[in-house]
Image (cartoon, rainbow, N blue to C red):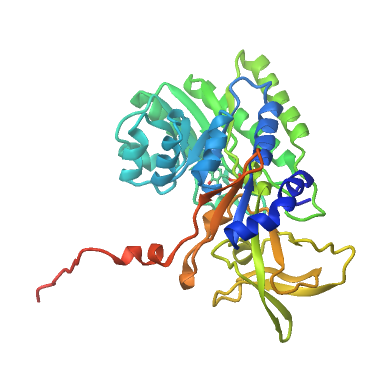
Length: 422
Ligand SMILES: *Cc1c(COP(=O)(O)O)cnc(C)c1O
C-alpha cells in the first residue's frame, strides 16, 4: 500500500500545474500526511509519561520538514555536526536533541557539548576519557550481540560496529556514575524497516529488563529507554502496514508491569525516521527516452543521485504512471533507468507498467525518507529539488536543485602546496 489515497487526492489534481511550474525531476512531500503520522504516533503512546519521538534527521534533513517535527513537539536524533546545527536552527536545544554518533571525533564532542548541549548517546566505553566534560545525563548505545538476531536490513548485531557489548555495559554505567553522572538512559537500534511490530516490542522488553539489572547492580535509576528507529513502512502494494496500535498496546503493557514491579518507570523515547516521512514523499520524473535491446528501457530525467535505495539495496519503490491506470490499459515489462554510467542506476527492474510514452510523468513512491538525503554526485550527477505540498494546497520550493556552480564550488580554494625537501 504505497502512496495513500489521501496523498493522491491532494497531489494528483495539482500535478500538471506543479510539473509546469517547477519542472521535473523533484521530490515532493506531503505536509498533511506527515502531521497525520506524527500525531498518530503521539496518540498511540500518550499513555506513557514522557513519550518522545526524536526524528532521525538523516532520513530527510530539510529545515522545512524539521520545522513540522518541531511543531509537533518532537526532538531530533543527530549523528553529525551539520545535523546538530540544523536541529539547533529549529530551536531545539538541550534534551530535545540526542547525539548518537559512532566513531566519534573530538570535534563532534565539542559541538555536542556547546550551545545548550544535548543528550549524549555514547557508542563505546573507550570514548569516556575523550569526553570534554562529564555530563549529568548519559546514555549508552547497547549492542546485544548474539543475544538478539538483527532484522534483515540491519543485519546480525555481532557484526554491527555499533554500541557497547553486553559484557561491557555494566562497567560503562559504573564508570560514568563514578565520574559523576547522575542521570541515565539506555539506547539500542537493532531494526531497520521492520514491519513485524513484535520485533520492536521484544526490543523494548530487552531494554527494560536490562535497566532493571543495571539499576540493581549499580543502585541507579534509568530516566528513559530509547528503542531506536527502524519502524517499517510497506514499500510493496501487497505488504501490510506496521500494526502501530497493537505495538503500542503491548509496549504500554510492558511499562505498566515495570511501574508496578519497580514503583516507577522510565520514559519511552524513539527515533524513527522512515516511518515518519517515508510514505509522504514521491519522486516525480519524466520519461525522456525509450530503448529496445535485450530488454525494454524507459529513460527518465532523474537518476540515482535522487534515490539510491533501488541501486544500493535492490529496494522496491512502487511506480505509477501519472494518468495511466494499469488495470485499464495495456502494460509491458520495462526497466526504468537513470543516466549514470552504472548499471545499478535503475528505479525498477522488469516492472510491469502501463505502456509509457515520451513526456509521461512517473511517480516513484515512498521517497520521503533516505531518498534525497542519500543522493550522491558520482558521475557529476546533480541532485534534484525538493518541494513541499502544504496543508493549504500551496506548493513550496524547500530546496533548489544543485547547479554546476555547486558541483565546482569545492574546486575554488587558495593555493596550498607542501614542498617536501629531499
Ligand atoms: C538511521 C537511524 C535511525 C532512523 O532509522 P529509521 O529506519 O529511518 O527509522 C534512528 N537512529 C539511529 C541511531 C540511526 O542511525
